[in-house]
Image (cartoon, rainbow, N blue to C red; front, top):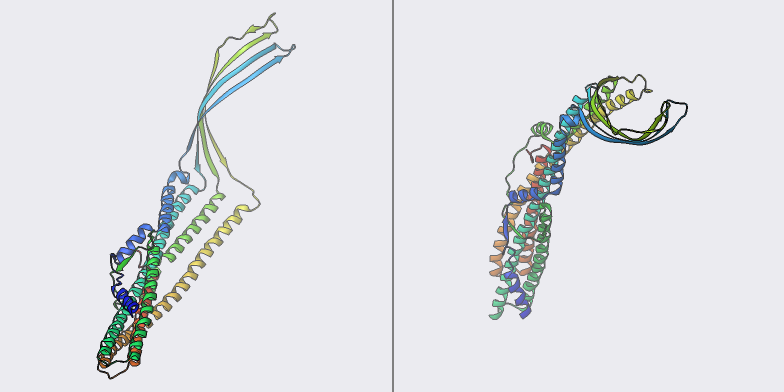
Length: 444
């Protein structure tokens, strides 16, 4: 009996709200968006795309190269039949230069490349929205799941408190000879079952909190919270036609498919640019300084003579135009153009297929949403009836009008009704979140 009263004291003092910070859904979303690595990766890729969106990357401007080369050689000549009979020299020199290359026409490839870079930047922005959207949806689901488990824990704790009062009430009756040992055992058995349910539900709640921390990107998964939002029945009435119209304009997956179609069209223009000639300008200057040392002998001289160490300097400047036009490549360019046009067709098919899939998802989700609204209304009425029934049963039990078995049955009915209502609310919130995601409403 002493151990049993110790259990009573332990469970009555258990308070999962002690030392916990309050957390609202908006705070959870804000924390999750700051910590989500997929969002950071998408943002980094967007920075790369924005950095590449430049006329220089597209090839609009000339390239200028500065060069410096050294020219060193050794020459040993021996030709009696030549004017210069012998020559034994070492030549050293430096040749600095600067050269510019500029493609002034290549079938508008530069313009199409710049447009392609702009569209790729738009696509990276769309990927960020999808990453944010997925993060928000995951956090909402994790938050409401934890909230359901928290409120279910409150229900179990409420029933546990009633069971504890029954134990104390029966023990008091036994002192006055109005209750038997059998009555005490029955109430203790109910209390122990409720205690087991409380411990299991507490573990379920802690698991939900860890999943919430994971969704928010919190490193310490055991960080406790007291969730401040409530599962309220405050829902809107949606019309399928309105939702379809909003989905066509706002769904981020669909918007990305439109961008992919634009990229495919630009790729076709780039392939068609290969049918035009390419015109380039190449210009530059070089300055060559050479120094020869050694000796040489001419045919009109008796002895070889030393070369004077005089530097030979040469300055060269040039500007040249070049135009190329491939007249035969065995049809490779035409095949690439045909393939690019096929990719455009595939992109359009992907859009049509995605629209069909999204319309189906939207219709099914809306139907589920409307069904779950009715379920919430029914289970809310069921909980109200069960709570009222429990209050009446408590009065009748204390008045001796019903036995402990009947009272226990009513308690279990109240627990089950509360669980059904919480699950219905949770499913309704998740379905509404999915509806909002499909029309692109999670991220604006």
